[in-house]
Length: 330
Ligand SMILES: O=c1ccn([C@@H]2O[C@H](COP(=O)(O)OP(=O)(O)O[C@H]3O[C@@H]([C@H](O)CO)[C@H](O)[C@H]3O)[C@@H](O)[C@H]2O)c(=O)[nH]1
Image 1: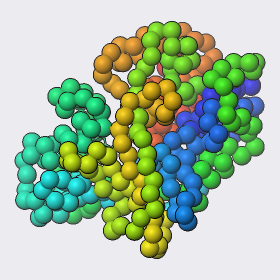
Image 2 (image 1 turned 90 degrees about the vertical axis):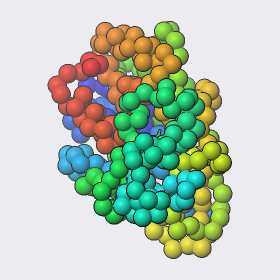
Image 3 (image 1 turned 60 degrees about the horizontal axis):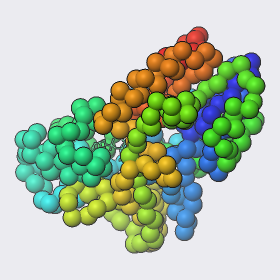
């Protein structure tokens, strides 16, 4: 069977590999000039930099971890995040170490200190309007002194970077970079795996789905003790600063610091976070109903399913939808 995969980010690359492994003839169409989507990394001043913000792979799903390890040698490590709050710099999620610095706090006080300012900057709306699908992601008070941001059984990053991992995943599969939005439609295929924003598939005929985006600033500065500092305050306009030399534990004096400034997706920058408010959920449901009626198209990934999915959930979603024996959108 001939399959066209639209997009070479995580969903697209996993889908392409999954199908090629099962004997299908796969061709990938990518609008950017590189594979890997927002996981793309590159080298700057000798430091491996995640171009579109920090991506730590973390999972409790053995089949997902096994799949990813076919394409990369992972440096298995957990990353610790601290928050720069009006009461000092503390580990986030809030744990016993945080409590030693600012005193033990009630859930409401933790929410005020760590989440309200950050989330309002990140999402651009008042805290009270941020839906529970987002606030539910916010890690609660954690007992103990484990300062890793995620507690999943497996976590880390590819030693040679995500870009190299994607290249390995796509080995032997034709990939077209820098494509126009509709180039893939010219190819006659038995099936399409669409990983772009679902409204693009339908020519935005039912309205445009909105996203939050980020403006990234990269500066070469002195190496820092902390891997990531979340700005949980109103003083600094950026939400987080990442010292990229920590990915590979690079012993450097100078490093690359990436700062993230939240903004709206405007059609020229990158779609980063689906916005589950402001009419978008209703708009998405209309597109999803239309998607269900499409024969021989599978919609997968964060953009096509308009869901705030973690990386491992994307891999699991692709495996389920393509391995479940059905080809149509679900
Ligand atoms: O200090 C904070 C942190 C978070 N929030 C709020 O929680 C929402 C979800 O946060 P998070 O999952 O961290 O957001 P994101 O998907 O951008 O994070 C990815 O980056 C790394 C992580 O930062 C470690 O490098 C992680 O692997 C991914 O989850 C957030 O949108 C805020 O609303 C907060 O308020 N304050």
